Length: 175
Image 1: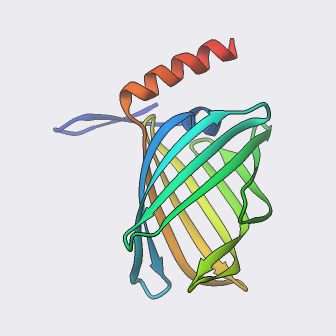
Image 2: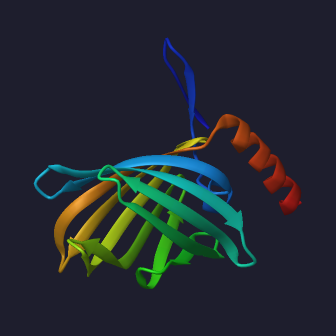
Image 3: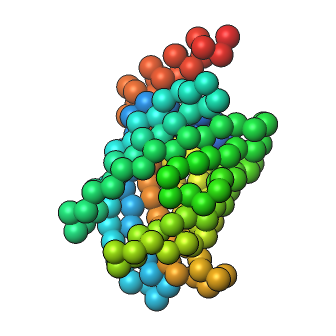
């Protein structure tokens, strides 16, 4: 790991992102949606629970938006090979495809996004970067017919206690 040291703390940057390891257990996330003109349109928090499955892992996401709207989404993710992932959830059209490279995962999929009480098929182009063992950042560009509609920025955080116990479980299951 790369080590960044400043006068306040020591922070280690992750050199490798292992989604099936990072996403196990409970994770809190917070994010915003910014439209193509730079206006913040929505803020939200997400409570996520990741579980192992026979083919990979699942993510149960509970969104709470700043206008009080709630949404639940369940992803089923499987690892195809060392660098490739696929995923499905209710509003994904077909399959999401992910390519892993060191500390980041690029993730692309078409999604039926709810806009003004109707669903519109859009394309998501995500980049997920594991910054530290406990923090992952996500930027998703949302496009329609190749034109940018907006971007989502999300910060995911695991608790240190949870992370160490998940790592112990993961290590014992791998060996």
